[in-house]
Image (cartoon, rainbow, N blue to C red; front, side, top):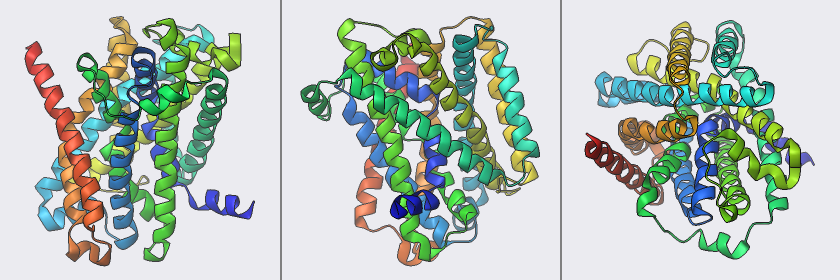
Length: 405
């Protein structure tokens, strides 16, 4: 019991990382993949989680090594233009996720209350703005809130997975690499929704905000592992649940109600309510923190602030929230299919990723900055794997968009 208590006392940044990445887009993409392709793409989640883990660990090591921010270090070593490029890229990635979070909140609350979806982005974005602008000690508030929401999601999907009785043989086969040609859109979206590099980079800031130093390196590693295991584990559970509950019945996911049917094994008629609560938790937790992360990285990249509590960061976070809300409202008024939009939003974030990945890789290999915590050859093998994975997905998305022009 004491070990468990100590574990939860040390984790914190990892829960925030998991809560941001596990947004409505992640739930939607995972459900759609399971319903359409069964267990065959489980390996994608594992590959993306490993890549996310190594880049998050690199950022965590920087956080315990240095007192200056990671983008300040990049600016000093490689020029302010590079840190600014990374900051802008991170803000664009966060904005792409942000309108998806608004759509997720709206869809969930519509399912729970029957009140028109167009109302909810205004309400919850307003609530998030109040939290960001007026809350003191924002990190501590977010850390506790994210821990509760993530644990709620884990419990709901784990219990339901047990009741759906997934096919264990097909599950094992799902870890053998296989890419359906016609399914590359959702594969790219699954990679993008799991391997989220602006969130990985922000681990350095969260570690510093926690007050950890080099003596806390093991704590940082444990926290990173906890966050990535939660991230990958929940994603795998959603894919497996959808594969077991929806794929055999040939159900195609086009609405939140379709996704909710995967929870019927455990919750029966309450499945829709339970799923929408989970979707709301995923959306609102990501809505607030994702905006702060994108804003913090942009502010630091430009050299005007870095902390969640800095005024420029909060102003940029509110701007990001408002942009996401406006785009979501436009899409809701045009009555575009929300499930398709969430998948598209996840996939398009890939275009902003390369600059962030390269910056994090370079600073983690800079011995002048990192000293004895510089990447070793094992770290670099995994990091190069992550870079290749991202570049392949970007290449695919580029050719897909060019083909549509």
